[in-house]
Amino acid sequence: MSELERRAVHASGTGLPALYLLGLVDWPGIQLLLVGLALTVTGLEFVRLGLGYEWALFDKLARSYERENVAGYALYAYSQLAVALVFMPNLALPAMLMLTIGDPVSGYLGDNDAGTAKELGVLAVMFLVCFALAAPFLTAAASLPVGIAAATVGAAGATLADGVKPVVAGYVVDDNLSIPPAACVGFVLVFVLAGPGLDAALWF
Image (cartoon, rainbow, N blue to C red; front, side, top):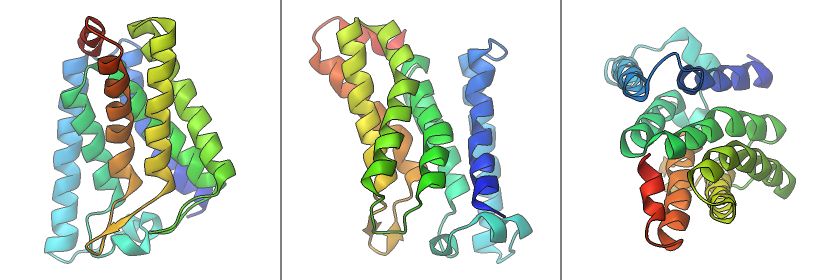
């Protein structure tokens, strides 16, 4: 499978946020779909890691460091579920889109192995894409300066998560797991620091 095909599979996850943005499924429905997705990938990973059955598609999509660990596609599902359960749409959606759109763009331009960082030019593109994805949601939730600041900090967090895959106790912290939470932490930090009253925007 070519790198472009791999990234297209990654970007297909945009379908779930799109269902909500198009008004086809409400937010509780999106959460339920993500729970179902997480349970499905958990079952697939149990069969692969616990029972030793290798899925044919896994050989085409997986990285070498995923062979003995939970694979990136499962972490992709878990991280989206986590932010969808913890945060309301105005924060969770841009974080999810950073993973489904920003990460494939960045990955196509320049991949990085575990423990190494991407090139600065690739990181700059990742930041700009993530900022563009977040700004419309966050400026709708607060004043323009606060929304822009939140989008900036959240995009920076997602870019850092995308740019470096640290190895902790022999386990690679994959960006499929870290991008959405890192973005949401950045959003929340700015909203909380912006002052009383704005934290209500976290939950509308």
